[in-house]
Image (cartoon, rainbow, N blue to C red; front, side, top):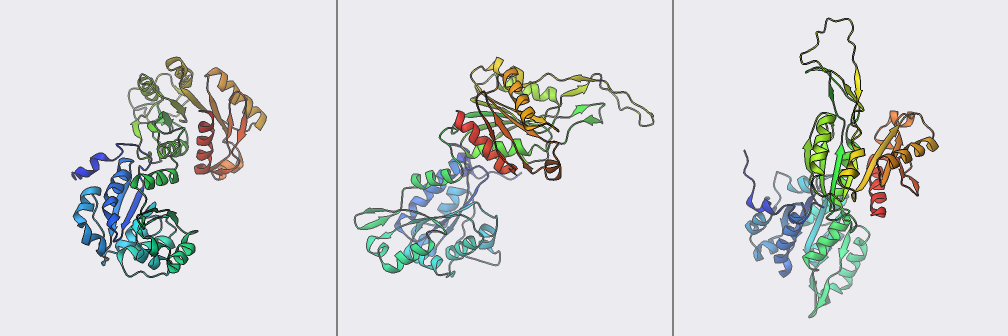
Length: 409
């Protein structure tokens, strides 16, 4: 068993917006370098995994062990045969690079393609691999107004995101760590409407036992529910997910309750609803039917026929508002081979039956969906409006669903 670094105890202590996000924090040689430690800790408190890259000038001011203490990760101070710059800045290796503080020297190297230091090389790779880069400049005001520096800023301003310095006592001082944090949280989808909200989501399929070995189930992967959970974590919500045996990895930053059968999902839902939630989203493809009398022993495989009698599974969504009348309830309605008009009508029926605030409906029987289930077209229906996402990737569809929830809160 690997012991957890003590500094990681603060992770997610202030929020989960950056859960699962890898952030590279580049620290160049400015007196403001000491504030980078505070910034790293702020990222971690919101779930981020931070790796520091420190220049020699920065380590002359602050020892690398301090950055390792702060983040729990090894600090990059030189490039070796381990290709540290590729490990942190190549395609999809990290989610964000932050340069805090950034000197005129580091800025000039990035603008002119010079990569002769660990920071400039990491930035060169990151810019090429299109990892978002945030730069917080810090230098004397006269240096900031140097035409060469101005030219470098103008060249990079559409390629990276600058955080304006504060002009005090003849110096362009780096923005405060809290300002950088707010910008990063906004980049990753923090939402004033959703931040701090307690959200309960069901996701994935359920299995229903025929005997101890065989089951009936459906083809749900759990992808929509997992993506929605991840989206809400990034928005700053406190997410609990009741997750059936789906094939998708559950979202980082969410509390995950694993279940298998519809009965187990129902029990978990009822147990969780004893605590107060702001939003409940039933995105799971829970079984509608379960075997009436499952065999307690394995059914012999030499039988020519087996008769299976199924019974209806009670609709979980119908009990939610009875347990918490004030919760914002989102239901899902999947149909096959129906017109758009009929799909909306069935969504409205569910809206009334379960007292939902919003129903997300879609037709999973279309040829287009069957050929590529990673794309979908959903319709958001409430008591007054009908809004359609259009054919989009599931990631885009989930953002559409989030926007529909936000706009109604």
